[in-house]
Length: 308
Image 1 (cartoon, rainbow, N blue to C red):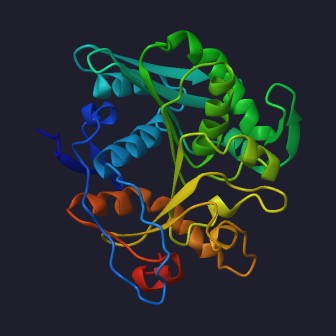
Image 2 (image 1 turned 90 degrees about the vertical axis):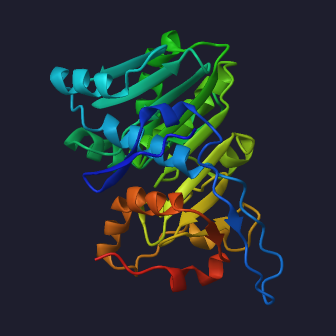
């Protein structure tokens, strides 16, 4: 039986931690209406939105620790259950707290990286500079690479090589999660899934091509400008699920003609659209009620009420 007991907390729909390491119980039926004038729109994959919602909540919760021992203990207790190890890791050098949940019963493990939540993180966000990484042989964003390298060094001893591994993150944490997954893959560790929410870009076209096979699924919220940053030579990799209001989504693959448009920064967009960056919990929660309806990307504005 799926664990569907939901609680509204701080504007985020929270799900029992057990769902984080469980697949298949929140699989919503995808409805794909026919649009005769757009016959070639690719269908989105089957997605377990309960699990996606739980992964988002895990990454969101990681930001609540703020280096505080008592908060770390509370968070550890919140996610503790039988046959599960919960690690709340604090990395002061890069001002990041992150979570690792290892379920020995299901042999699944999740690494969750938090969004921007302190002044040091803001500095990392603003350090938008592509540098050559000699290990991977690609260009990476300097600030998010530093975070990923620190997490890599800390997390590898905690991982079980024979268990399935999911890496997830929100905002800054999403960017660092992608780069961390690149490093872990380079280290010959099997990364089964990377899921990000509101993730900025981390590399250029060459880097995106080299890691095109990374098992990454990116979630964006309609009108959220953060995934369009940084501008310039930065590009995204992997397919994108745009979360619209209610049960609606749009889906783009890197081969879609609209892909570059959807991921480019528009200086003419109003600043108040940053509010959309806080809408992921609400929009994921809305997909748990039943059918999920996919609409063509070109029609997404009709399925969104601008955040206020």
